[in-house]
Image (cartoon, helix red, strand yellow):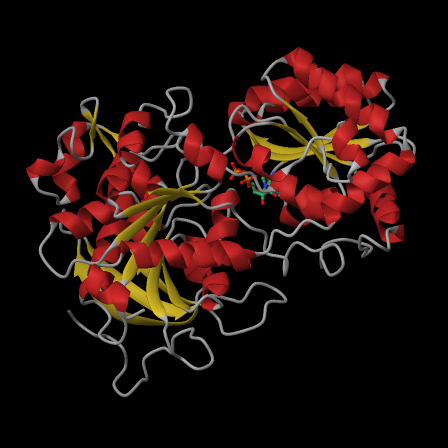
Length: 516
Ligand code: ADP
């Protein structure tokens, strides 16, 4: 391995506890990371976890593919080595610092980035071309990430090597396979499923590119109905598996939500843990949020009313405080229950409410919402696109955050809604069921209610939930009480970080476990 760091240059310092003791070295592997590159909740979690884990005695570095936004955002980048991929292409590994999330304290997180322009230097979406087709060489693009992780786990950086590798979603699914099936130091691997619906399935023809022994291509391996599944590789070869909420950890073991992998997940249930995602309150806090026009808190809500008026104005909705403002911030996909939202528009409008949707994705859904906005000018509005600051202004100005998902591994927007005083209206599924307490007579009475929850994925049930939200809004005292309870929810990373550390330690071989 070549160390291309200039002679005499010091190795990057690790993020450590102040006394430097007891730190568990963890390499986190993900395709996205906030604030450099985000297409969904995965990036929020990958961005928040390293800092959170540093408070739980973990020294975390991250490995990322060299997508243009990631290379551009890496600070003080230095090449530390290079390696060859199974198909002969050479990759340089850069080491640098990730820019701190705005307002965050503490040392910058160290990152390794795979510099391979032939694989990653493409405009737009990291996974798909302009026609929204997955790139034909995605197996190579993400196999490279796995090989990079294996090399870093073994010998690539002479100054730092992880004790545990933690991969996220199918993009990192091959990481445990590379570590388990190839010669060299064996480093335990934890694999987190953020969304089982996206599996990284490829034709068996490309197996030769992966650099794995033929024995990997079998049912007890990464073979999935005659094809290659990166997700299955992660689930099969990882030492420990986590997913992003306790309810989702149970749901993925069922045929309904297992996407064909429920059998494997059932056999691995003793290694599977559900750890609820948390919220980075340095970024998502209405008292300090840099993107919103007026700050506020649970005991000081004047700013929220002003945020609502500003949002209505910005979205060209009628500016009135009396109309409950329902909002959606979402990828526009079938998963998110947006057909229910479409089916409930009349109920909202006839009930005196308003609807604002921010999202991009499925063109049919975009067109349907555009049509609804044209037919209900001043009451329904749509903004197509991905707009982080606008998303913050929406949560701040919104009264009700709609998340009626068909399935939802964890969901972050309902948690943002809670903290911003926008009552979540959610379906009782996955992490939504774990984070929102339905307002019924009992929970209103004992002040535990935080939102509106409905059970069945049906238009009738969804519309009924909308009517319940409208009715609650007409009872200002009850509404205020539910909102208060929601705004006081604690979604901090402290507990989740401790859980992850416990999983890492459980993944270690017995001898090293004893010394942590
Ligand atoms: P998923 O990861 O399935 O997309 P999550 O609720 O876990 O869903 O996370 C979605 C994240 O992406 C949240 O941070 C949300 O605010 C953000 N988001 C989704 N769509 C948009 C958009 N169009 N503009 C800005 N942010 C968005």
